Length: 373
Image 1 (cartoon, one colour):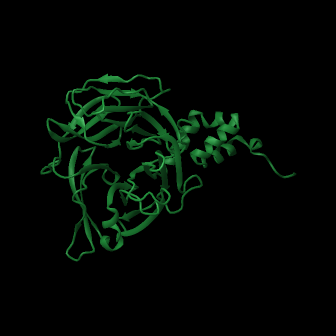
Image 2: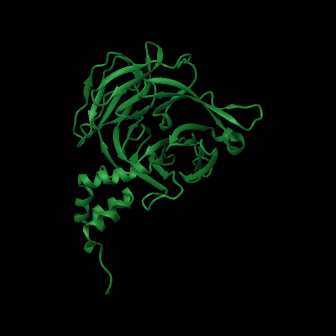
Image 3: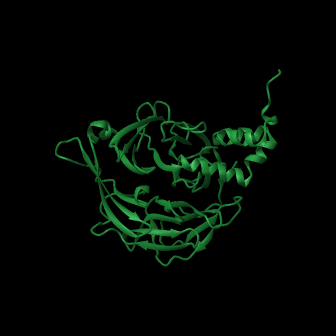
């Protein structure tokens, strides 16, 4: 038919611009049907530009394990009210079978550990592609915890692997083809990891146990060295349920006591959220008490679904998410703008009906990536 031009005949710059607006899963399809498009998508320049654009509009990522047939589910949405073409809500069911633990995503990739077999994989949630890493030896009484980081200077991802027995050495793997070996590294501060942490400016931060005391440990991804951080004055990390979250408002991360929750005012509607914020530039803690107007009225289902503070998305918005899905398999995220004191909700369909009480991990600042395509 006259007047119709095939995609292959379009100018290279126009084809490139169209591809840059596609979702990662759509790029996978394009790479399968066309060798020319596959070669374009896999170039370093395209990967960098695609990632750069995605970083301007980060996503909220939800990760969970299915119940009926164990498999990994990912759902993500862009927090902006008017998302781009490749944004919107993305719901992905992967081919990964089993019950997995998730570490926070870094530059579009996420690291998972299977509970029973201790299988470790790197996954791109947007494409469902994954890379299996070498097996780490561990007995039935030992738990494996992984953290994913990125060395910007060498442009490589690294995985830090720790085991819950203090006498076992820490391991590091530089991510490549999947055949790279684990390397033992020296740690001058023998510790066991308590849980997931955050990655910020080339450093991993996580809660750890050191001589029967809870501390915050750092791991410099480039130099592969450990260094503890002193906890805030008057804070006992052994008391309560502490968690590290991203907190971009003040250039660092925040320490939150999840067992304490919100502090309500006498009027019953307003609430205070208390956090300790670590500034990576000044290397100092500061107490931050945030007044949230009419929280109790807006989050009416808070008692049933237990909203937790998950950090900041962008400059002004605080993100609160439940720890499990509702009866219909959905969950609702609450975003609060500290500048305008305005709320907004985003409802996400995570699963189908019958998955109530299924726990979900929520991660901020996830980005779309072409890695592993």
